[in-house]
Image 1 (cartoon, rainbow, N blue to C red):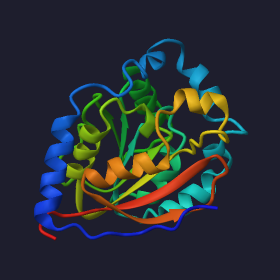
Image 2 (image 1 turned 60 degrees about the horizontal axis):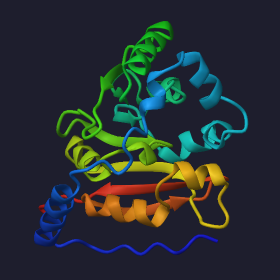
Image 3 (image 1 turned 90 degrees about the horizontal axis):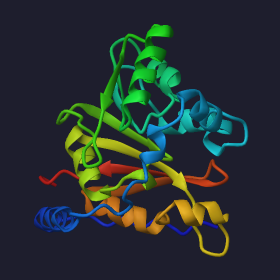
Image 4 (image 1 turned 135 degrees about the horizontal axis):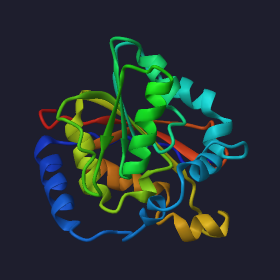
Length: 234
C-alpha cells in the first residue's frame, strides 16, 4: 500500500535558498558511466528491449497516455525518449499546434527519433540532444515534461531537474515514472541498477523547485508521480 502524499507550500526565499544550495552541492556524478551502455550496439537491440510485452510501461502505455493528460496545442518534452515508445502517441496528442521535444543523451537515439518522426510524418517533433547536466530545452518552452524510466539514469539529477524547472512555463507539470526500489522486495537487478527509491527521488525533485501533486497507481513495477513547478514569485 502506498504512503499518503503530504503537500507542503514553499516560501519564496526558502525555495530560492534550497535550489541554490542543492545545485551547488552536486558537483560530482551520482552514477558515473551509467549511460555508456547506450553508446554501443544497434538501436534495434534496444527497441527489442524497450518495446516488448512484459515491460511495465509498454504493457500499460495506453493507461500512461491517459494519465499524462496531454491536450491539443501543448508543448511537451519527453526527456529520455530513447527508441520513441511514446513518440507517435504524444505527437498525435499535442496536434498540429503543439510541439513534442524528443530529448535524449545519445546521438544514435536522436538520429533514430528523427528518422522515426520523418517515417511517420510527425512534423511537430523536434529532437534535442541533451547533456548529463542539462536537458538543453529553451527557458519557458514547454507545458509538460515527461520522464519515463530515465530518472535513475541522471548523473546530475539536481542540475538536470533545475534545467527542467527553467524549461517549464509557469504552473507547468512534470511526470516521473520510474522503478519501485524497495530493499527486500524489488528484484536484484533493480537494486543493483536503480540507485534510489521513490522517497529519495521525490526529495530531490522537490528540492529543485517542484511540489508533488498526485500519484497514479496504474503500473505494476513502477511508480507514477505528477509534480507542479513552483514559481519563485509564489
